[in-house]
Length: 187
Image 1 (cartoon, rainbow, N blue to C red):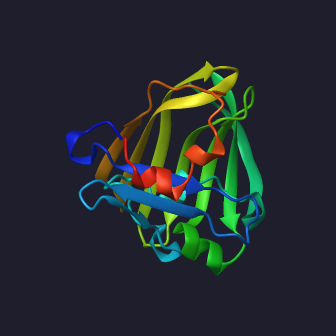
Image 2: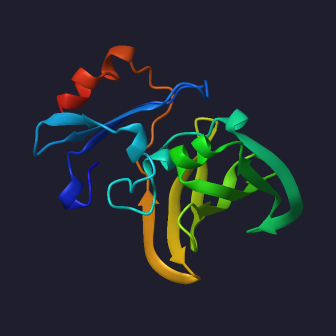
């Protein structure tokens, strides 16, 4: 992370496994401690870097852990979308993600999620996600600005805007750069 100043130098490393039975590995490098801390499975529903995003939001969803139903078609910012409901297949998925149900607005032209509503296990809490900017970079659709809002009983609790810049794709990063040892070396 480059900014804000209070998190400058923090690093995040994640191995996102395709198999639902494999727990994703996540580590956070904390410059003040000069070492990386593993994010335990039981902590993945917690706030990511003090934001409204959780550690589980940072990983892709394992499709086989959810059941899906197309609710209807609509438009978001002039683009046709499918509105899709996702329900976890069991309580383990709820425990891992913190979500009892999700609604995703998926663009029909590029299959990108541009809006979402996630119902938290905590009664009355929901998270609203909106992609406010995205672009194609090197042939890939990349979300460059997202907002996550947490509400409780319909009232705003907190809001986070995540901006991603200076994106490079297909740069040929060697696997040796994506290790815990390299993360602990910092910037």
